[in-house]
Length: 301
Image 1 (cartoon, rainbow, N blue to C red):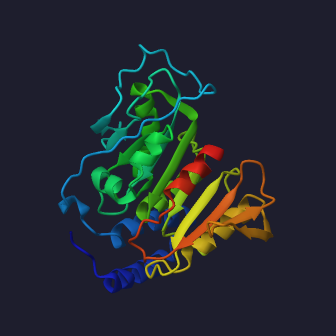
Image 2: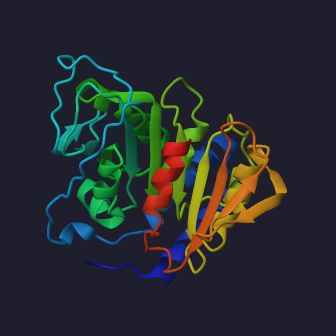
């Protein structure tokens, strides 16, 4: 597995930021979304050996929603590695090992860091066992350099998944790390009638508070921000972004509370506007150990 030279990427990042400073807001948004793909997370995990996929067995309780006739979805339970979006983006699908095709499942879409394919992202996040046990169908996406066209393509993946597997369209959740965290956050700003996420968890995203301040707040949306305090590539970005989301979601900025898990929860937010901020350690390239907290956040949204 190869590592990038962090100092070199930082110099490139600073140079690109200076060049972007003269761009219009709309072009600047696309550029800022794109630059993280060019400058961060160049670790090539595809060089690592492929590991077996561990699926969890979920418990279908009495309150589950029957959402699909069993003969209308051709997707089977298990591991599916070669799915393709309408725009040609490859992705993988994981279901509970005891997948019931008549039940409407929440979908967790995982966007990758730059330089990661769908398999790398799955190994990196380790979300498959816990998410499938919790009843999620999980989709891992290959990385593409971010642009409006790529974001449009990423937004179609839930529809593609729902053609084969039984998905609850009201429970589509997004997460990702670094470039993937930026992509997850960007989906909230889409102006068309495409993907509307039920909640977002953005990890190590390359969006500062000052970047976000240039844009109009979307409708209140549950957002959880994960960021390591010793992230040298994007220092302090997570706390700034969380505060921006809290302000957008009409939270009481003076009434935040630190929970037993160390995460900050903002209080008094608008309905469906919960905001949480969790700060860990380990630098930019470490996925935070918040998988259980993330899934609880999604399921409570």
